[in-house]
Amino acid sequence: MTLNDLYATILARKTADPSSSWTAQLLAKGPEKCAEKFGEEAIEAIIEAIKGDREKLTSEAADVLYHLLVMLASQDVPLQDVLDTLAARQSQSGLAEKASR
Image 1: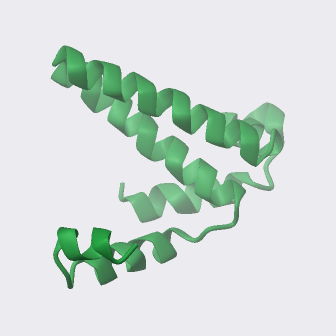
Image 2 (image 1 turned 60 degrees about the vertical axis):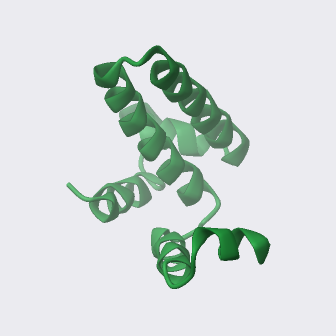
């Protein structure tokens, strides 16, 4: 499964009955709850990275990616827009890109 596949599944859940899907439940709670869950998962990933537990970090990283996509969907931000932004940044050094912001 690619991120595009996962994002398509998440988008399909936007109209699903919240009682039938965790993703639909999150999306029904609105962008604030989606952002909160993303933040929680990011913190959990940071903790596992600091601990050095690769297996738990891998699991938490998957949660972070999922919740990032849910947050994007809650705000109607296409994943392709994010990927396009990353692609555009590849044409310059990280230091130059940072300096341009």
